[in-house]
Length: 456
Image (cartoon, rainbow, N blue to C red):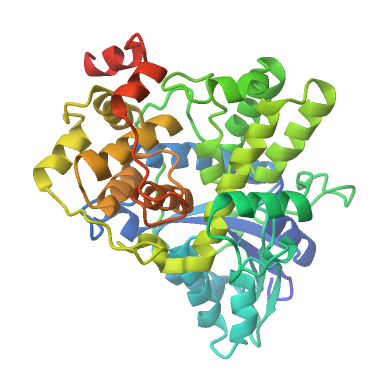
């Protein structure tokens, strides 16, 4: 076994086998492969704002995604280790006991995720070239060839672009969306998705002949998938993501009216509902974009189909902003270094969390979030505006509460949008405030949404 090249793929925000570049390249460079996902102990502990990183609804979504991923790995003759603890320590232990030769991982913009990956790399090769590590963690694909038996394969299929695709350096990336969008649309081409591992663009079937029975996993605490949260249609997994895409694009043609319906507040069909699948990597943005282009060729190309790509660009913008600004995403003064005139009032904060502010549209949205783990994009803007302006609260506590409650929590998009509404982020106008009554009249004129959630 020691003479074989054994590969370990560290799943994080890429819970899929389709269009997973790092996983595919691992199969090309090793003789056998297996995957691992680690629930960090810290995810279940209170953070500095008094909330957990991982709430029950998102936990249930991740667990359902992992069940699906494990089945897909097993269908290829491999398996998925699901553990709980410290990811760096767990992977170190697994590699040492099994003479792992390669570790593959998809790059992610999260500050903690990048810090954690660098810690893992340094653990195997403390003398590694730091400039190479910085290049990899900034989103450039490649191999980190350490002076140890373990080599790292780091790829970038969680995003539409790599930093080398942009017509600007990361340091000179625009801090507002519109100039970013205009330059990217004019000068850069989004990457195309790849085929699945058993048909990788004609490269033949991947060899994933390694299962748990052949590994020494002693001392690695197992995580039992046992969540009893009921998510209904919003279950996780690559299979569910692909089914939703086919349903929204090719069965219902919902995408053809996306621009007109996207400001809805409730239900399933008013938007794509891709956000949770993207946040956890059950589907890649490139795969969505390629199928979108297929829809435009075969059915219709209009403002609505463009607007979905427009929203994918917003996601891209916030993620690269996070890579550029790092920990500033969590700073009270934001990326603008502009201290807002707000503070924390515990009673007002409690009223907001429980949907008891007296602003009906806000209260209905908060009750929807607490019950379902979901809130529409329009709703998020309204409750954040109320949080900052009407209630005068420290925006970081709102962002932290969303982090705990949302099924589709995405660190860059969540914290970036909260900074945007708080006037310390990427909004060129600054401190944007919504007229809550006008918004109610526009988006819930008959109070259908309000009456549903306030009188449950």
